[in-house]
Structure formats: structure tokens, C-alpha cells
Amino acid sequence: MVATGISTASFFDKLMLEDAPALFRQWGVRNAEYYLNSYCEYDPAFIDRLAKETEDAGIRVIGVHPMSLQYEPLLFTPHPRQRSDAMKAYELVLRAGERLHADHYVMHGPVVLGKGVSKNLQLERLAPIFDTLSDMAEDHGLHLTLENVSYSIMPTPEIGKEIRSLITRPLYHTLDIKQAIRAGVDPLAFVEAFGAHILAVHACDCDLSGEKPRYCLPPHGGYDFRRLIDALKGRDFQGSVLLEAYSDMYREISELKDAYYALDKIINA
Image (cartoon, rainbow, N blue to C red; front, side, top):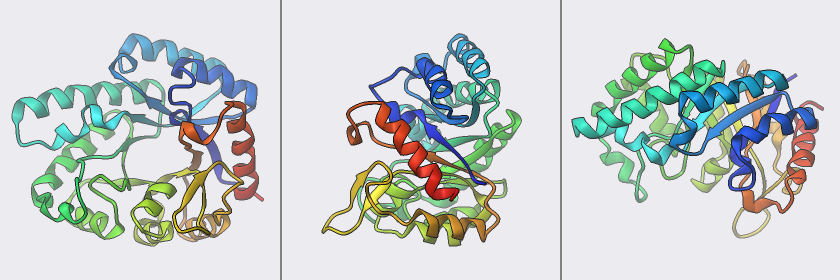
């Protein structure tokens, strides 16, 4: 069976992070990705409380995912002071992940403003930074995963392959279905490119029958999850599939519970 769970990013502005473990226990959800919304949630005292609530609820934390725009683009800046401050925030989140016994860190990386601008990101300069960030993550028992995000450094598998060709340290991936579609890429292309280096999948449903994609909760979009999962399994996928919805996809939080069980049923049929 493929492990399934929910990313707390799905609760954005609807439920505080520290209230998620009890809700997951009530719903019978055993796997979660913790989305850290702001700097106060990086604080060790907050993480200690969250870790205790998580352990009491019997939740396994798959990954930690910060609000990336708060500091991640500055991890790659040439300005030493900006980068130093960003590294301090990154270290805090890595410590949070270690305290929560998470498997990996989810990174967006530098922001790309405009189609084709990624070619001007000087990947040769950025590659050694990825090596450093990967080493730092490993020091805390975490895998660094670079997520495909339509407005960030890796919107396509081709750019991901180029990054991977320039680095020397381990780099893994989180596959986001909706972000791949937004970038005009079939999510299967990332599976073919990265295979077992994909450690997690961010899943919501998508209706592709109209002129524009319509993103929604499972099972209301008709996206072919089985095809994706079969392709992942064919490449020795050992990761997790996590429901990651936008909060405007639903009105009542209980809808996420129904969506989670629908997704789990599809994936593990």
C-alpha cells in the first residue's frame, strides 16, 4: 500500500497548525506534512509543544514545508548578509523537522518571474548552494526535496535534470500535480525524469475537460491518479501521497476528511 496523508497547507487560514494533530487523530489520518506558516512556528518552544501533540496523536510527520517566500529565495542570493539571515531561518526549520522526526524538507527555491527567465538563473552558481543545503538537511536527518512549482526554479523536469547534473550531493523531489499542470507539464513527465527520487506527491483533483484546468477536491475532478501511481510504483516509489488543497476549494473543513478518504480509496484500491 502507498502511504497517504494530508498536508496542513490545506488548512491555510482555517485551522491553526497546533490544532491539526487532534483533528487528524479524530479523522484517523496517520500521516501528515506540516506546513509552517510563519516565523513564530519555527520557534523551538512552539515546535516542542507541536511535537508532543503529534506524538500523543500518533501522527507520523512525512515532511516539513515552510512558507517558502519568507526566506528561501534569499538562500540563493549573492548578498552575504541576506543569505546569512536566510540560512538562520533554514536552520530553524531543519531543527523543527528533526524534532518532529520528519523524513524531508520541501523546498521551492528561487522565484522565477516570467516564462523563460529560469535560463538566466545562473544554475552553475546556484548548484553549489543546493549541495550546501542538502548537507545541512542531512545533518538533521532530513532529505532535501525540491518541489516543481510553476513560478519557481524547477517548473519543468528539463530544468530539474540540469540542476541535478550540476550538483554533487543528494537531491530528492516533491511532485505537485496541480503545479505541473499549471506549468503545462504532464505530471508523469516528472515521474519519468526523477523516478524513485520522488519522496512525496502533493495531490488535489483536477478537471481537464474545459478550456482551463479546474482544481478541486477528490474525487470531483476526474484526474487519473491510478495512472500516476502505477507509473510511480513502476519506478520503485517508496514515498507518500498527501492531499494538498487550497482552502478556497472547500467551505467546511470536514470536506477535507471526505476528500482524503476518497483519495486513499483511489490510490489503494
